[in-house]
Image (cartoon, rainbow, N blue to C red; front, side):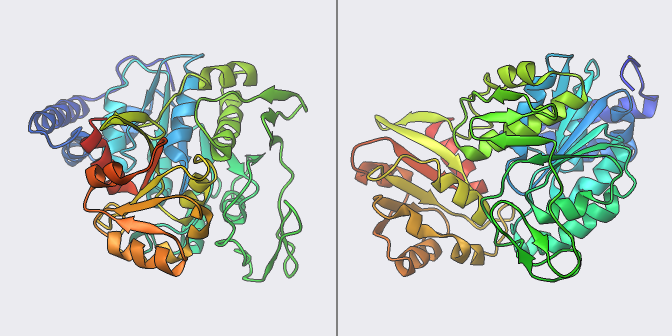
Length: 412
């Protein structure tokens, strides 16, 4: 674990050097951060490199459909109270990107790593984490990731018998099913606004009963476990019943839930809730999410929403009507090319907002908004949309590649 100052073999050192060189060349060519291509080259030279880079670190893995980038950042901030942290802060969350991140952390004590849901079991096998945070599972990129029940089964099989402490959201039945194969689970009542992927029992297929915040299967007895950490309004309750205030610069209930899970993870490493939560206040934005930027003399708040659950949470935190809203949707490889998920989003929550639609799939979104009886205008680009927006801060909501397009356009 931590303390070995030079754990790498000559082959591993060569792979790290080559990966960094390729990444630097990619950046110089204006092709992004280079972390993914650099990691791919490094792993080609040493397929065991990820395991070698992780062997001197206390590793935390964070996986979920929504919130993993933000939660990774919050945990990293909390753990810096106890030592140096290396993290894939920009969200390159598959093995190549993770390898690149760890290659820069030779002096670190902790690694806080966001992991794509499909790759969690493999990355856990390579990195032997001390803790794994499981936040939620919902439909996302159906053409790539398949359905949520299959992902939960993959997690369950991959984490069976894991030595890691699993910090898991007890309000998501799919997460509970996945985590229940592990011998050491800390349950967090973090909430679940989106429930449409968890009405059938993942254990037996029966119909889930959901009285209030509780849930259970009447057929097989699978039910919500008792939490030891609880998100309670503006506070998180620890296992001793003490209430700790959550003060964040990040907006919305979902980020309070992320903070509650992060506090539970920090406690595994001996960082007290008060210290952890105070450090989380320093986080103002995460890879551009929640940033307020100036564009054409207007204030724009940039919000990322990639799937129905994410859009539902985002609608709950935007300014109320008549605040103007710009929606941008693409369907490129990183987004998933299937846009049928647009029909699962309740766009009636935008009633009263002036809506402006842009992005590669603006016409798909326009049809969905028309069926939802919303008033909107289709625009050619962000410049035109902002020009047409009435006064007030503009809420800009975009899925993954559309969000990156917007950040480049506004110079963020």
